[in-house]
Image (cartoon, rainbow, N blue to C red; front, side, top):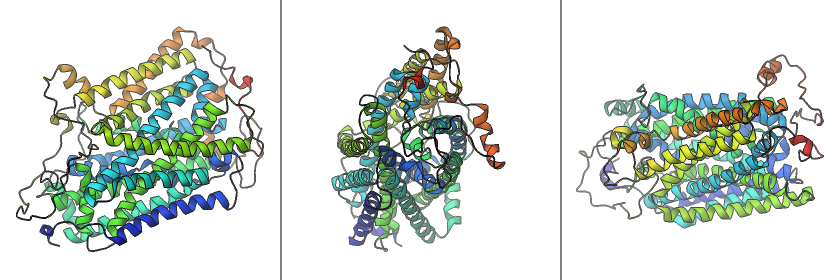
Amino acid sequence: MDPSRGIGTFVVWDYVVFAGMLLISAAIGIYYAFAGDKQQTSKDFLMGGRRMSAVPVALSLTASFMSAVTVLGTPTEVYRFGAIFSLFGITYLLVVVISAEIFLPVFYKLGITSTYEYLELRFNKYVRLCGTIVYIIQTVLYTGIVIYAPALALNQVTGFDLWGAVVATGVVCTFYCTLGGLKAVVWTDVFQVGIMLAGFVSVLIQASVIQGGIGTIINDARNGGRLNFWNFNPNPLQRHTFWTIILGGTFTWTSLYGVNQSQVQRYISCKSRFQAKLSLYINLVGLWVILVCAVLCGLALYSRYHDCDPWTNNKVSAPDQLMPYLVLDILQDYPGLPGLFVACAYSGTLSTVSSSINALAAVTVEDLVKPNFRSLSERSLSWISQGMSVLFGALCIGMAALASLMGALLQAALSIIGMIGGPLLGLFSLGILVPFANSIGALIGLLAGFAASFWVGIGAQLYPPLPERTMPLSLETYGCNNTYNGSNWMTTTAMPFSTTAFQGHNVERTPLMDNWYSLSYLYFSTLGTLVTLFVGILVSLSTGGRKQNLDRKFLLTKEDILFNFDNFKKKEQVLSYKSHPVEEGGTDNPAFNHIEMNFTDPSGRTSGTHL
């Protein structure tokens, strides 16, 4: 293929493939609304009746973790900073083990719907309210960005209609979440994982053919310094090193997998604790496969443009448009395949957004509606859950519109996700791992964690780290054929999604900026978690935390850890309380009951000190 002939454009078949993906997703929602088990109760709607099995839940966890930010952002990250990003494979292993062995056993045995119910059972209702409100703000912010960012990148390269894409994504997600509940979310995610893999694989195969095989791609990457796996520099100010990715990355992603409602809600909807754990471990394989695909796409991107970088050469206006640019360049002779890649990016978006909408509905019903309106029937709660799905869907589309006005603040908002996740992880860790932690320690620890992570996070946005901290690798343009006079894709709207924040501040650098504010973004979450834990422990000890009478089921116990070995012995699994029947299909989910279990009686909450 002649690189001087310019890139292709979207044709009818590309739109057909994209529309097909949206229609199938909507059809799954309709199926779960009207076929089989209808959504009789709010538990059916929000938790799939707690009868889900491991494989679909695992694929769903993978899909919602891999948003369009992964599909468009990870290959660009590898193109600019090298394949050290693949070390996240080790991080994912640590994250899954911590989530499955520390957080899952406690949430599962309590049979809760919202993870924030745990905070009231363990501490008090004020701590629960804090956690709930912070989660809702974080998720609506993030979901708006997830809808808007890929729409902008794809619009600027493919001419794909920006607001058409934003509204279509939001409406389809809201539609199938509202009709089909968690079952629809999980099964559309399974379908969307397939689309994401197909999109990546089509790019990889064609790139290998054009570049002369995987060997050439790896060789180009080696010559360009992209195979930089091992950087053991312990300096916490460097953006990506072995330590920032393994340590910082583990804290950042555990806040997502271990305690974030969107993920926890899926695995505690499994019919047995064994299935719930299995879903996390199967999901790990999915994470690895998608990570390998994304890193290889990044190396293919470099191999294709190693001597003529489209970004420096003003063919694209921001790094996150490089992947769509590559797709239109190498797949232009195959109508429908560029559309498949756009469907791949949007599958990531749909799965993340749908799980967020479903989780937001669950949190609102369980934490805000149920405690204040105790007389509501199950049917009413089911209708309210569906209404909340519509409301949050509309809110997220609105947030996407707001994101379009924020420009470079989008990167700030993304970092805020890390800043919020860390202190929340610290709060749950206090409850589960520290028997003497009390509600005063939890609240003050949480506030201290927020103060620390917001201070460094916002400072890093205002005074971005210098290139010697982020260490981007060189990009060349010596091979560009500048006589070609075709379309120039430079546009006025800057794509604000690159991983370095807004630059161009002509301020004199102070030691605070060059050190504290230059902390690797992966450590924001780590800092928030550790400060919350440290302050929470100190305050709890000094306010009589040792004197409280605490029910052990709110803590991680020896029995929870030994549960894995019981499974291998095929023992009868008996949980600490026997209020649930063992159902057909072998469910041991403590909250699976045709008559709703309710934790709202005051006796369930006598533990812990109260403010």
